[in-house]
Image 1 (cartoon, rainbow, N blue to C red):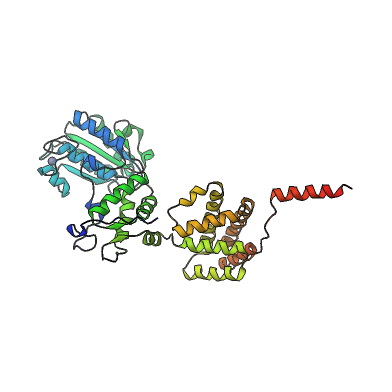
Image 2: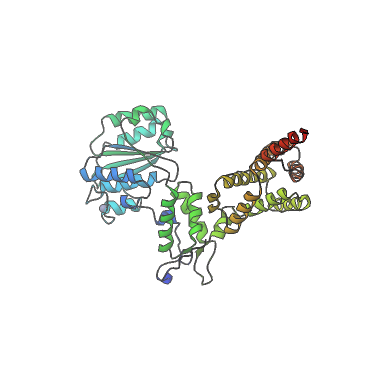
Length: 407
Ligand SMILES: [Zn+2]
């Protein structure tokens, strides 16, 4: 399972932790041109064609969950429009406009956080200033983040400008809650929906960053981080940041290992949950109660333990139906094997019955004055569960009964 990638000449570039003034990955590798944006192919293609053909509207709205690149894209659009060799999808990065935007000191790109400037007076101030031409670039660009936070009167003030915008003004809005933006505003904007980024796309991106940072990695470790990021580049990058400082290889090179990432994400508990489940199904009460003590020492909450057992039960049921699901990367190879073994030895009716008992137990644990005692009672109940006869066995039993009646 382990596929460690060895880098040929790690000493040639800066390592993640070895260099002073280490910048977090999200800042260091923030895209500055459209071609660097990942997982948003439709948006990139549309913007690129618009910029090349000089057919871009005067107002855009970018929407999507957090960490998908709304603000980053807004800044790229600003660069693309104001680059002195542009408008171009590939801003040069060296002209006065590009450098000013990179250093966040461009007079012509004004970023406003609507969460802190919601009033109509704030909006009037902005509109008033928008009358004056850009200082040193083609456009005066207003980036308004979290635009849904604006007050109703602020939206109304903005609407007038959006209806008859000065030719030198562009608005770029970003929001996580598009449904809170009035339809009158939306109808005057070009809308872009930023998608959650697929985990294979994220994983491929993280691998290129590891290579650039001269960091070794396990394939599974990167896949785990990509999965945990749930579509957000920013969340994924901050996990990768953490993982890079977590461990080093024998040669002292930073190494992102699957083992450490599982620990970091709190997935190593799964092994203990599997063992507990196995003990419960084996009917070994003394050992089961002993295992509970391990969870208490780790500070696990009784309800959380039952939830984990429910998750495991669900996984085992799925495994019975489709053994291929054992290839779950959140589990170490040994645990996958143990899971398959358990699934093979337990029947679906038993698993369903355990599921119901766990659900009932969860409810009891939540209501009991002592959740810990309620959990122990549940554990006792589970270890004393006698396996139900299968339907097959029942039918055979009935068959035998009727056979016996015959003389
Ligand atoms: Zn430029």
